[in-house]
Amino acid sequence: YRLSSEITYRDDRSRFWVEKSGISGKEPGSDPAFMMPVDQTEQTQDQSKYIAVNICGWFRSGEYWGKDENVLQQEISSFAKLVDRLIEDFDHDIVFVNTVVPADSDVSKRIVQEMLYANRATVVDQIQTPREMKNLISSSAMLVGMRLHSIIFAVMTHTPFVAVNYDDKVKSFVERIGMEDYLIELEDLQDRDKIMDRCNKCWQNRHTITNSLHESAEDLHRIMVNEMWTK
Image (cartoon, rainbow, N blue to C red; front, side, top):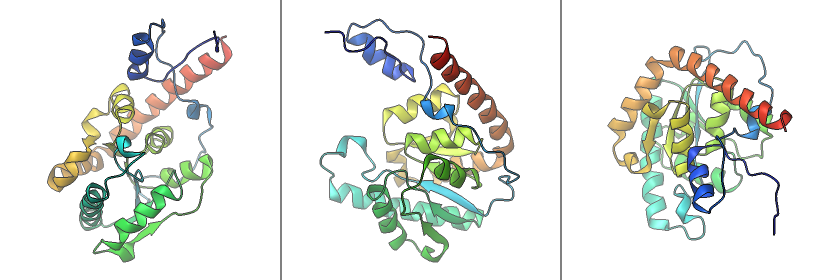
């Protein structure tokens, strides 16, 4: 039975699975989030006082139905050391922005408990509207993010980011906008020097990145508008 009149998807990864199922596809579209208006603010990354961090409550997408607590604890410990390095190297406070509450915020709190500079970290543990989440990321100097929509909000607000690939959809989106130089794998959490190299590169190139993300956001917004209004 035909249950839908059309199938859309936001990246080539999705198109691959659609076409593998024997359904003809078209060019990738965009995420509906790009229909949201971007608030114009005088805040700039140079004026921002914190670095935003976004994590996934189980880190690996494949563990959604059965987290390995030992693996998760190792990742939490590694991430706590990484966040301490961010504070030491950039002298910015940390705000954990959580797109899923309480799954992500509970793990964020566990990370903070293991940090040396826990007094410089804040966990947002209330459910945020998309606009509130977007504004939290917009007001940060940089995002280190796992969940796809934290990265999408960074693109929308032209906020420099380093993405942690906890799921292939993150890698696919980051590659689509040409930001693969700022993508790290979960396994890299054990190599903080490697991660900090990416973060330092992002920091040093933040003005160029901001301009690039502005162009990407406009392109993805235009694609979404076309999808919505050219049926």
